[in-house]
Amino acid sequence: MPPVFPKQNSIILAICLLIQALCIIYAVNYSTKPKDIIKNYTVTVEPQNDGTLNIRYDLQWQAVAEEPLTWVEIGMANPNFTIIDYSVSPTVKEYAPIIDTDFYAVRLDFAESYSDGEIVDFSFTVNQSDMLCDDLQGYFYRFVPSWFNEIPVESY
Image (tube, rainbow, N blue to C red; front, side):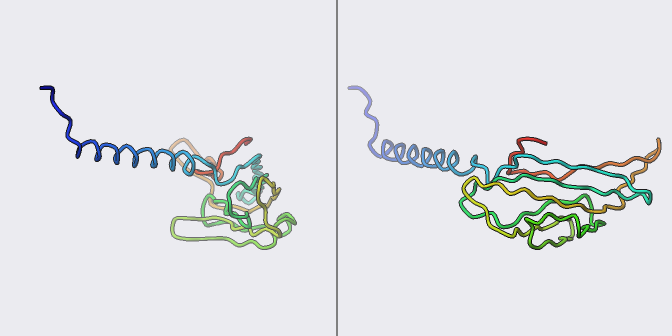
């Protein structure tokens, strides 16, 4: 008599396969979908006579998420920055520095909300100090502009 596969194992196997299929569907639909898309990201750095850097950020940001895009945070190199007031684009209603223990950023609240593929162009400039580095070979600047872990950048 050939061996018989127990019914209990078939039911457990079917349940496990169903759970696995649902997890894969969820992962494909939700984890790979970008929250937003940065169409263009330009950073221009201008060294000043006092050793500080004027850093201009120009972004073209496309709203993709289900929630309307009303604000963004752009990371800064260190807490020693000042937002140059007259440099903030008119698409920005309010802005403020965020200085936390290990997180330094500028929060920008937009004058309007954006959704369903709409694009907002915005820019601002900060005066950044304490960027000069020193090693055994001399002085140098090291600057890494903001990074976006969950948002693709099409043009940088």
